[in-house]
Amino acid sequence: MRREQHRHTAGWNPIENAPRDGTVIETMCTYGVAPWYGLHMWAERHGQWGWQDATDPTKSVGETHLFWRPYTGATRDYVDPTGGEQHTDVYWRRAVAVKHGLPPDVFEKKEPSAWEMFRRVFGL
Image 1 (cartoon, rainbow, N blue to C red):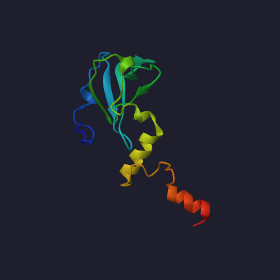
Image 2: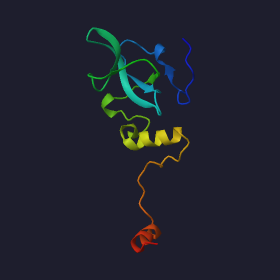
Image 3: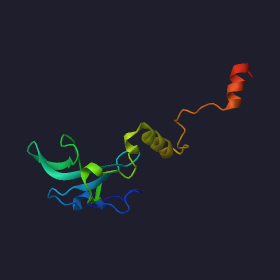
Image 4: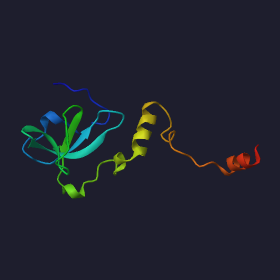
């Protein structure tokens, strides 16, 4: 199965080549406007085998748009490549802006400048 190379996949392997022996791996999903990351392992859950979240056994992920690379640290110490930003609304708003050719902060609330405040107060 040939996969189209995504712009974020350099250094990542197709999930089809990942170890399926319970080894914890770092995963990257490229579905959507920005990649998201996690730790997963091949495990049986409710009678079916799949990629189970290594930090939360109640979660799993499908193989579509999934890539992997080795992970050797402790699961409790994991910090994703976004530094945790993927868990914030700002990460996703910026991704949408960039995807549509807009400035990354276009959706962020901005404080008015002193001049803007003066204009508002004095009706200029």
